[in-house]
Amino acid sequence: MLELLWKRFEKKDDSQSVIEIPLYKITPNPSQPRKHFDRSSLAELAESILEYGVIQPITVRKNGGEYELIAGERRWRASYMAGLETIPSIVMEADEEESALLALLENLQREDLGFFEVAESYRRLIREQGMTQEELAAKLGKSQSSISNKLRLLRLDPMARKIVREYGLSERHARALLSIADPALQLEAARKICDEKMTVSQSEDYIKSLLIKHPRLHETRRNISSARDIKVFTNTIKKAVDTMKKGGVEANLRQTETDAGIEYTITVKKESSLNRE
Image (cartoon, rainbow, N blue to C red; front, side, top):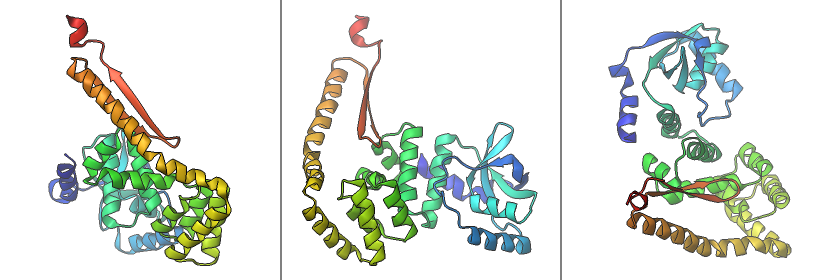
């Protein structure tokens, strides 16, 4: 389904006409993965637009009497800066889920999204579209573990996350910081890594020494070892739901990852083969 949708998106110029839409009638995509737009870069794009116009149309979908962006928010913002009144656009049929997925894929294809932005997009799709990690992985053509690993990055303290982003630390730096359970020490470590311009290997060694100095942080290790228990618990829930299904009960299990942990919701239909007899 997603492959067909992406092909339709890629071939939009061949199959759909370009129309001029007033800028004020277009609203940003709430599921836009990119949250940080560099103002100087936008100013440069605005200058280019003033000289050459908008070369590549943006893509939108109808939203009541207005339009919602699917792709092209930088061009839309820069056009505002350039003082344009309208922008060349292609109107595409897409529901909320398709629009969110296409906005993410369009940015991923360009490979200019930060890893935190990717993780935040995954979390938003899971929460707002009611997907499981497995469903999202299938739609994006990725493994469930790659989705899970990206989501784990969001467990970093928000201030530590900000430092990682602003100083351009790598995803591996961020993963190393996840070893520290205490938010204050996470922040302290992030600052020291930046101040001393540590490599990933140096950062990992530093964090190991920090954990030795603070025995209370060994709680992290216990949490990691208890992952096996969580897996056993999860498998037990799944088996219970399977048993219900085999017994004629229409049951459905949904798994959702939140900041606090993993939520399991079992829905049992009132009308089942058991109570119809």
